[in-house]
Structure formats: C-alpha cells, structure tokens
Length: 151
Picture (tube, one colour):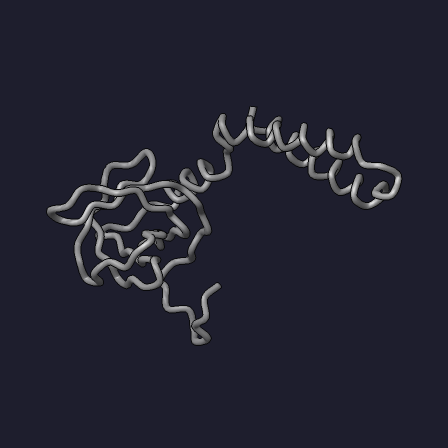
C-alpha cells in the first residue's frame, strides 16, 4: 500500500500484476525482476536491491520487445520505472491476462494442495470436525476450481 497521503501523482492508473520480467543496465548483464504494478507510463518492479535513480535501462516485459526506460526511483528493493514511450491499453490488458492464467506447474500444485486438503479432512477425528473440515474442503474446492478453469 502506498503511504503517500497526498493526491495521486501518476498520469495513468496502475494495474496490480505479478509477472517475471528482465532488466538490463548499460554495460551489465540482464537480471530477472518481478513486475509488481503496471501503467501506460511505467511500472514498479521488485529488484531485491536499490538501483541508481535516473539511469536508463532496457526492460523486457513478457511477449514484448525490450523497452528503453528510465529508473524514476529505487528504495527498499523496489524500483519505479518510467517508459520512454507509453504502453497501449491493450498491451496492459494482455499482460494482466497472462498474470491471471496459472502455469502448468501452478495448476499441478493447486491439484496437489486440493488432494492434501481432502486427505487431511478425511483423517481428522471427531474433535476437529465442523469448522476445520469445512475449511479444508472449501480450500480443496477453490484449488480445484482454479485448476479446472486453467485447463
């Protein structure tokens, strides 16, 4: 959550997102970052360390050519990036759609979690019936629903 209490300073709205991207500073090797939010004008990424504000970089977003961009700010392992040229709204929508589709590995993990929840619910003795069993079965059903929608 943004701790800034003043008026929103961004020119365009942000979309929360969680995707892998890569960032390359001039004269350095590219490294993987996690895209945290995205707008037409820029994004915020989790870099794990601070970078030099004002530096020009290449940012590779999934399915797009690398974008020449500027580091607007960097602190606490997060970095704000301003694109040299804005993204089209359709590109933002497409990237957000990628974020919503679980990978094959994530789908498999959801099914495993569902199986473990159902197995644990079946093993609980009478003391734990009721809320605990219901919660486990609800989680199992949610995992299966998301996995089935991704298939």
